[in-house]
Image (cartoon, rainbow, N blue to C red; front, side, top):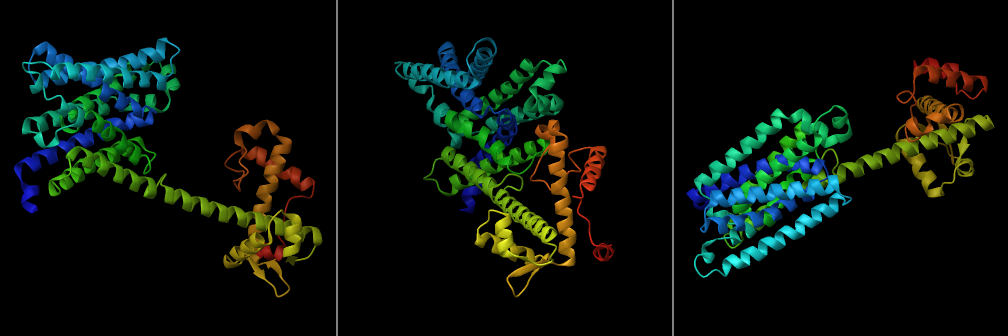
Length: 427
């Protein structure tokens, strides 16, 4: 098993596919951010006619010439997508669908014609461009992949600021007078370069996955573009590395599909465990929010009932009359608040605030009544700043408005005040 991994051909393939994955992941991240993930797929499929035409022109198999043909065909596909979107009423998804269907159809027709040639059609090796031929990678192929990856990295570093603005706010980039169309075309051309270089290794179908999966997976871990590009490159490298290792250890499995499945596993792990947008983190955040929001609602309702009755004790029946809660939900909210030390249960199925709970209840009630007063006194701000799920108004409106709202609540005797002894204890 170790001998298989240390074999010369395995090391060559390992380096080539890993570098290819890193470069494709970095460049493909921009397609993901631009919501053009299918553009990479369209470019990969658009490259096939260029390969066939290059073979027909030269009359023999020449990898460099065929890759140049694939690059020209891929860029042509990008130009057609951009032109259809810019100068016609065709929407972007329809334009991508047109290229994604027409170019492969032309490519397969030319491929069949070449295969039927009686002289050298069988030597074209076009099947490697469709499904890939990872095991046939050589040292010059690795050098070519490395050079293209470094070229893409250099372009991204030089135009990082421009690509960043175009990816997130095209309208702002236009307002600055930047050539958005040409920047976007250059960005898509980098995708075409990554696709063309990877065609002999993993093929048309698999190359689209190398472009999309690393960037989509990295999106679950960060909101920073710099870190996104780094993580996507690392995921692409890991995809190639893991896929090649498994393919070498289990020779019955083809390398291309194993590489894509490795990328799929990395994507699924990111989707579940990503620290920024992962499903588990979002579920945990949602539960924490629900607990915090429920706690605030309980404190608010309890304070309102206690204020109206003038009694420190509040029963569950009073809370049920105040809010449209079920008895089970009320019991759960009380249990959570009691475990947090905000209320204490009494033997008569009643609760009352602890000193810390009373302080917290006053804070919550103040925030809630400030929101209510803001909606009444400044309705024009409702659509832009109001967030009733937030406890505090401070970070949404100016201090002068808060002071005005506070004074209004005090005039109406609706401003919650702490008892003097509780306030001194809190201090």
